[in-house]
Length: 370
Image (cartoon, rainbow, N blue to C red; front, top):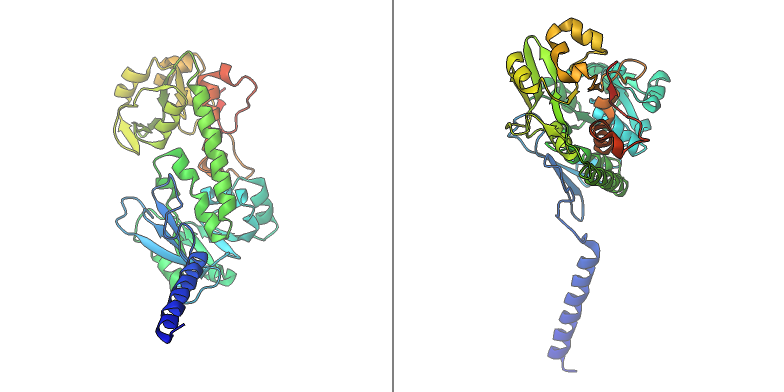
């Protein structure tokens, strides 16, 4: 073969081998976001690292935070995974750690009394998990002594000097915005956030897929009901009645349970603050009343304001609340587990709205006020 032809042939072979090598190394979905429903974060995989983007770290945030995570970090700006020990700051994080089987990686938590799970409470009582004070005033000296690989924070706004102090000592902080998601399944998908941190992405995706399947199956079941009860929610606080707006995740639950939420057509994703007169005029004949603040019984409810006894749901004893189901130190189970398991919340609501569809089902969170 002439020298020139041989040179061209060798170049072709080199390019072919190089391309094949690149295809073998680069992930199939390089750069593709693997988060399906949640809007507050994204996960993108690349050859040398995985990029985690937090898009909604706190209420009305315009800031976006990006983090690079890797099993073999090549630079100081990368976070090594799997995380070996961690500090988290919200009970919603506890349930997700337990679902992934990594609750033993938790070394500190603020206000441990709020944690209701028996598994994690055992670790607290044995001293594995340390009390760190208040979530907005963490004992940073104790936290630094624990030397966590990472702190998963919770914040209402960008003005949080405590987290800046922690970062100044070389401990990375990632703000978790699961509570800002507008749909039940969007909140549940934040388990993929923790799956990434602990190098358990496949396990997290499997859990989320099962929760989604359960939720959608329950939603389909609810649509077979022959009745559609009207629903009132919330209660008074300092003469203002707070109840979920029509675009909130709570309202989504009620739609998916095939009920007629009386404020379903209102706009907004947070709460409506209404006068008792307007709520009474619209909701006095509602079939079911959910979550009447922190009252533990009908008697307590009536004693707080006599007008409550005039509601049809009160007279028919069709009032349901989740506040009575607590852990041994007073933590409310709903606040901890419900965001990770919206399928169980929906099944509870279907049991309330359409008990004939789930005759043998036992509530996880709600119970009828006595």
